[in-house]
Length: 255
Image 1: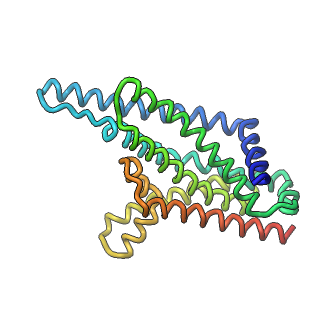
Image 2: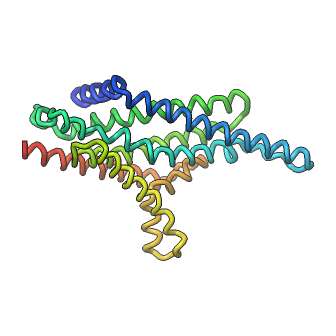
Image 3: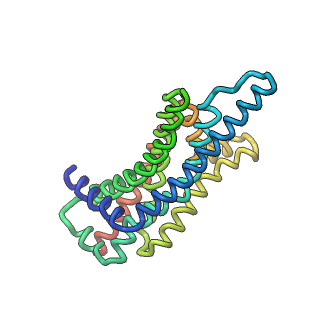
């Protein structure tokens, strides 16, 4: 664990001494703040309109504000997560330090987990900005905290899965732009697989839909932690890290 933590700290430090972390934090703060304000405004307008018509006032902040907000943030993650993972190994290749890394007296799995964990913590820093936005809902309202907590768990699991595959893609090239573009393409593919449900309800369609990474976020945003969603995300993380480790081992043999 000491080696994992050392590599994690080194990688996390490299994020914040470069413009990457600050650009991502600024961009995410603008986007999450905009969507939080937009969702809250719609909720207030609907509430006032219902009062004026003498109808029952919709007071479910979780359903009308928080759940749509988590859905929007999940989509934003498809664009920002590849920017976090693209440099994990591609930058080592570009600088020529990958040979030192793969020939060092540490296990490949420790290197992979250390770098992946740093990327997850970087993504967690983005979610902390979202938590700041949502905190105002608790100051001026009374939403149920359980769907909020499950929503953050879902976002973190989704990000961890995409970052695991992003790390694997980063081992295949020394060009960060290529790694980011391929990572975004894979994330987009895992997202649009859910569109297959419009083609029917056959077994093949259900399997393809199950592989969609965004569809498993829906339960978390509603406050439901389903075992099938947990198994999916954990399996995707394991597969991504496994592929990354195998790819790094091939680099070690070539080095």
